[in-house]
Length: 148
Image 1 (cartoon, rainbow, N blue to C red):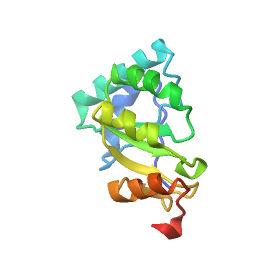
Image 2 (cartoon, helix red, strand yellow; image 1 turned 60 degrees about the horizontal axis):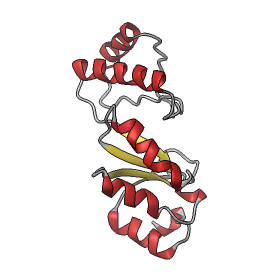
Image 3 (cartoon, rainbow, N blue to C red; image 1 turned 60 degrees about the vertical axis):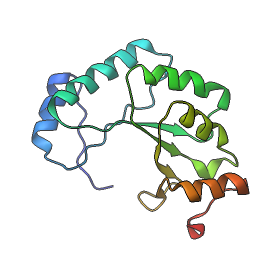
């Protein structure tokens, strides 16, 4: 992606990264931490609370569309404790139905911001357009880049 990368291990290093970067958008990846790992969630919350004191943030929960729908409620409950604003639904190209994600997003009042539909960044990142998502749900088929 040809962007700067920092790997802070403490909140002090994190603060320094935030202050020196000056970017309009900063992406923070939590490396796929388990929603069942309360220690890891607590650490993530510490970083988020620290960031809120330094910059204006919008937090998105990234969910893989091929996640077992039975697990969704637990994932949402775990991450709801630390808070998130929007949902990024990834790997839509790897599933034929993601209705459970729409249902749970509605239940918790969280909008989708983006969906990813392939491995090519940024080409396969799409705005989460409600009309296009409804079309994908009704079709029950994968959407390909040429369908957009």
